[in-house]
Image 1 (cartoon, rainbow, N blue to C red):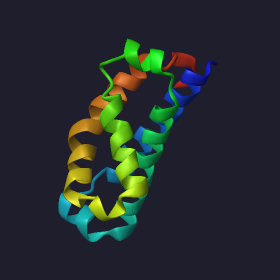
Image 2 (spheres, rainbow, N blue to C red; image 1 turned 30 degrees about the vertical axis):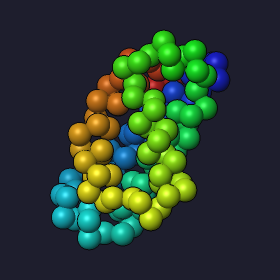
Image 3 (cartoon, one colour; image 1 turned 120 degrees about the vertical axis):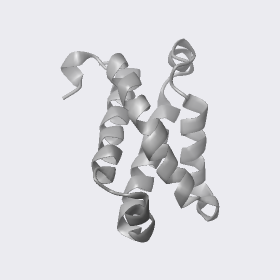
Amino acid sequence: MSRDDAYLLDMLRFVREVLEFARGVTEEQYLSDIEKRRSIERSLELIGEAARRISKPFREEHPEIPWKDIIGQRSVLAHDYGDISDIRVWDTVIELVPSLLRALESLVPPEEKS
């Protein structure tokens, strides 16, 4: 397994984690549950950290993944915590993470997905 494959697998695992944490949760429940918010934020941060470590050539070969946005969100979550918008994080989980799951599943070798 290459380094890029290992980081893609990490991203896939953390994406699945986010979706599991959010399963059955409404926006209102998310906003009122500090533990839920922090667990999802941390998983999103880890997705961004893994994305940041993927080689530039690989990222350039796969523009279908919003690398810059993922890495940028990681930076906000890790360093600019005062700028975190809970609504924006929730919107990311609902609107973008499912498509990221599909994109990553197409990139991770089948034997590595489970």
